[in-house]
Length: 485
Image (spheres, one colour):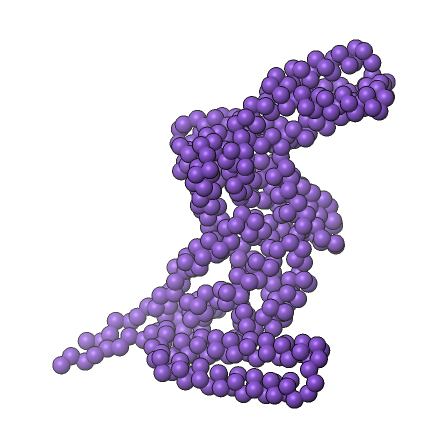
C-alpha cells in the first residue's frame, strides 16, 4: 500500500463535542455569576438605584460570555503546533515564510470587548511585513473583527461623532476603550476597503429606486446636483471648499431616494466630477429606457456652470448623446428678484406685494418674459435708488444670462425639482453636521475618509458595500512542498 501524505493546514478540524464542551464551561460560569447577582439583588430592599446596578451587572456578565466564547472559538481554529502548519503562504501576490513561534495579539476589538489570540505569523522576506494568516481568514483588520469594525465605521460616519464621542460610544457598546490611533486606523482601513465598491453598490441602489419609481408612475426623473461647502483644513485653520454631489430619483414629483458623493477640497473639484460622471454614466447605461428625463439642478456657481459646459451639455454614453436639462435653482433666482425689489423706490408694502407677485410669475408658463417686463415697467414708473443701482444691474444681468435655465413651469410639469435643496441639505448632512463641530480641523486624507464613509451611510448602501468588501477580501493560500516519492 502506498504511504499516505497529509498536507499541513492553516486551520484544524473542530468537532461538535469540542464546541459543546467550551460552551458548557462558559455557560456554567455565566450561570454562577447570574445566580450570585440575582441573589444579592433580591436579598435586600429593591430600589431604583439597586435595580440600575443589577441590570448593569447582568449586561457585563452577558458581554463576558460572548467575549469568552468568541475568544475560544477563534483560538481553536489554528493548530497548536506551529510545525504542523504550512511553511509558506501566499497573500496579495507575495510569499510569506512561517516564523518559529506563535505571537500573542491581546487587543483585538469585538462587539463584546477585547479578546486575545495566540497565532502563527509569517514574514515576507527577512525583514518585511508580518501577517497572521488565520486573522486574515477571519477578516480581522486594524485590530478589529469584521462585526466590530462595522460598528465602529457606522459610528465614525454618524452625525456629531467626534473622536471623543466615538470612543465613548464604542466603550459603552463593547466594554472596551480604544485610543485615537486605533480609531483612525480602523477608519483608514474601512475607507481603503469600501471605496472600491462604493460606486457599484450606489448604482445598484439607484437601480432599485428607479424600478420602484417605475411602479409609482411612468414619469421617472433622475436629477443631478452639486455644490460646495467650506471646511477647516489643518494645521493653520484655513477654510477651503469641499464638494458634494447628489443623484436623486423622482417619480411623479416625489423623491424616491438619493445617493451622495463628496470630495475634499481640490482645484476645480476634479475628483468629485470624475466620480459623479462615472456613476451617472453607469446609471444611464443600465437604466436609460426607464428614465423619462434627466435634470441638472444647481445654483449658477463657477464650478457648477463649468461642469455643465464641459461635461453635461453634450453628454455621451457609449457613443449616444444623452439629453440633460439644466435648471438654475429657483431660490437663487428669487434672491435676484429680491435685490431688484430693494433697488426700486417703493414703500415696504408695495415692495412686498410686487416681490410676491413676480416670484409667482416666474413659476408660470412664459414666466421669465413676464417678470422681465414687470421689472422694466416698475423701473420706469418708480425709478432706482441711487446707492442700489449697481445691485440692480448685477441682478438683472444674472436673470438675463441664465434665462434658458429658468423654465420652471416646464420642469415642474415633468416632475422635476426646481430647487437645489437636496444638495444643500447634503452639504449640511455630510460636512456641517459631522466635520464642522467645535474646534475641528482636518487633513485632506482624514477628511476624505470620513466624507466617503458618511456618503456611503447616507446613501443607504452601507450594508451592501460592507458585505461586498468582506466578500472580496484577499484570500491566504498555503504553498506546499512536493512530497518525496
